[in-house]
Image 1: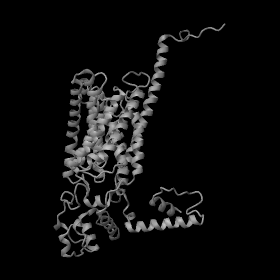
Image 2: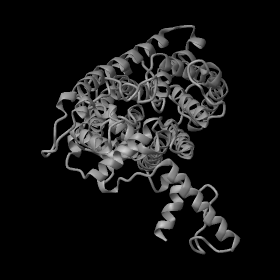
Image 3: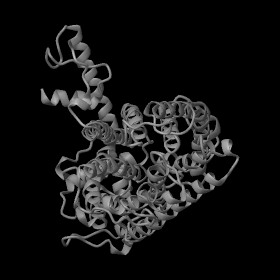
Image 4: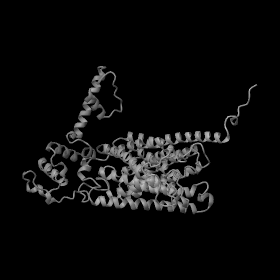
Length: 548
């Protein structure tokens, strides 16, 4: 006769409870680790989105910045960030565990998860400062952000700080992550000024010229300079002979003083060719793929913010959170795609079917729903998405009006929509929203939180950007900006060469003719195992031929 199995025949209640706690902890740890890795994967999305949104000449620069800010951010967050963020006990600065001191198993998990959010916040600044910022200046600022600005403010809302005690709600970080990162980016790009060619800014603008005076152009190595050369800076030397321009270039940019004339001549030719070039995204493919990676990773960003998968409640259902995020982003993206060209037609020509429109609209919707995604109904997320789309369009109009150039619309998407997202908690939250309670108390708390985050970020960011700008170490010289930061900051000097647009067109046509010729003869142009896709770029083709 089979005896019924009973746990209490083998274990007492304490042992059973302990066993199930261990199982729950293992499941939660797995969930948080997977989510943190997926959130860190957003760095891939940011890298693709940013590199595709700038011009070819600056693509490598933004990729380097995305890698560096993650690496330096991890180091600084380990040293000071996590400690300042933790155990604030109703105050403004944490007294937690610095440099991994006395970490237990739970701390390792929490550190990784917290850093994934911090890294996302820091990267937002990179997009706002793209195409015209010194690398070292940006890296120093990311260290300040990850080690000081973000951790303290995150502790206010999530580490037992004063905002949390006040009743401020921000489930996944519309304010803590996006408003802070977007505000920092706004002040950075505001102080930097527009890129050359935007809002009527030319390479002759007094704010973009080198601080060297005309009278400082002196003979080098005993060589004589014609008197007419002394009357020119490099930016106004286009009519001079090449040798004269080379001498002026070397005098203005001392770092290239010992460079060979042939390399400097290539730089000058690139400068002349780029001077009047129209802006063109380096890769719309990268923009779309990067945004799709962000889209998918965002589901983990929001869905895992409850920090558990075993103790679920009405305010922490990952399936509901992900659905709200998806619906809100969808409605926001469609609103922007349809209406932005109409509202922006008087201040900026926008193509009706520009993929960047729907992508930015979708990201704006995700930012806005991030604060309230856990405790709003799906119909509320639709309303939030519609509000987000029009709010983003309005912010784009405003930025054009005040002539602030944000290359990736990071300020509009993250600062403006992050602000809106925090307020939507006070409007649509199922328990505390004004439309359910008829009370403005929570909305007031959310507004106070927004003001505190903006004030804190501004107080830390404005002095840094202002002082560094006065020291001439924020914005690269106009020559760097026009030639491109890839060549000027990241390329070996002996690798810099000049190929005119006309030569590029001719070489590309020659390659196409070769393809047609070999195709007619049924011969592979490279090898039997190598196939050339219809969408292969010119550079890919040249590279494959060079390898061959």
